[in-house]
Image (cartoon, rainbow, N blue to C red; front, top):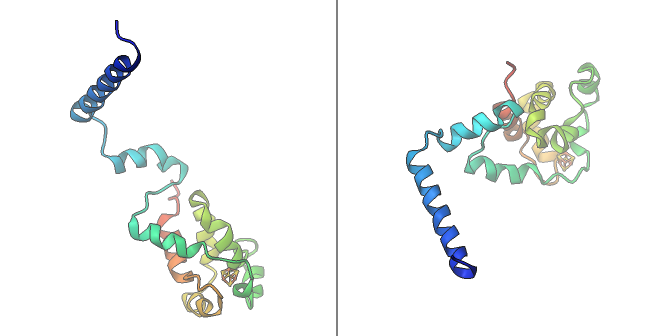
Length: 142
Ligand code: SF4
């Protein structure tokens, strides 16, 4: 009968054998497909390395509201779909399952305005890149 360190080593070895056997013989789909199966219905998409790097630039916002200057007309005309750029940066675009709402908000702001606002932002949030990221990752209506 094994005990102590010998038992621990035996259990570790047995676990290793099971993991290797599962990797060799299981019919589990590859990682990306498995990710889609597990999280796709929750509105989550995988992100690659360049997108991960870009995420850091999206989170620099200091909530100064300078990007909302001049947005009152669009906010009013959107009837609730566009809460202003700061709100999109701070809230809607930080939760992938909410990207469908963020897309509707970004749709109210022309690309040229988004580009101009980058210069106005003290931390240079790349609004056009953020808008494209949100559009690419928004949950698809089914
Ligand atoms: S201007 Fe930039 S830092 Fe200020 S609220 Fe807008 S996104 Fe955030």
